[in-house]
Image 1: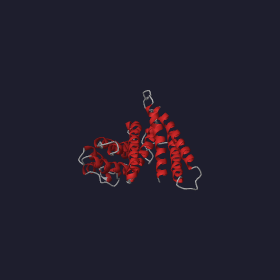
Image 2 (image 1 turned 90 degrees about the vertical axis):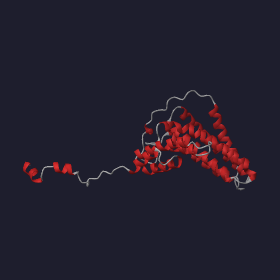
Image 3 (image 1 turned 180 degrees about the horizontal axis):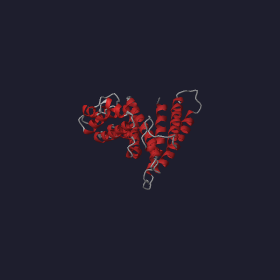
Image 4 (image 1 turned 180 degrees about the vertical axis):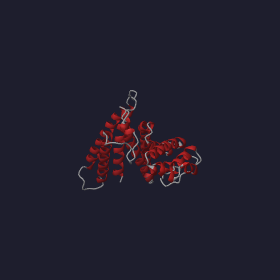
Length: 269
């Protein structure tokens, strides 16, 4: 167990340390975010319309490499595995190279690259935070502390990258920004800021016709702000007070009185 936990932390520190090193390099001011068709509303469950972009393909490749790394780490416990540590390092190196490619695209202002790079960081942050909560044995308290540090650093990266599509009011990015600011991983929750992002996400989802996600954002807003908050009231109104268009509705009496009798209409014809 000590071997597995130590190897997992080694891999995490390898990926995290390399990424942090690339973040510390001096960079020129990022150019304005590229105007992309992908930023337009999408009625489906995908954050961007159109075919899969290069950034999304890289995101999928990263997940495959990461999952293989997890399997290789589990194999360390099996005495039948042959040199499993080599597999761990190979797949983790592949995942790191994919992150670096996404970093390059994100630095160039690619909106989708910023989104998927932020999504990777957000998912890693949640994973590390979960691992920290699972560890309760006194002998592994230090490991829990390391996991919490990793979680914080990953959430800071997620905040940085998600802010690019969030500025374009992408509802998916705004939802994650709300989750970041409503959590305790970065310190005290910033509930008003979280509510602002949830509000933008709710409006975006509703405009897409996705009222289910809009309702989820409404619930998240109520968890972070007073139910009488004007933003919550507006979202509630958009969710429930939209009058349906029906062809069987009776006309007002004023209109009916102004219509000519049926006989006179036939006479005119």
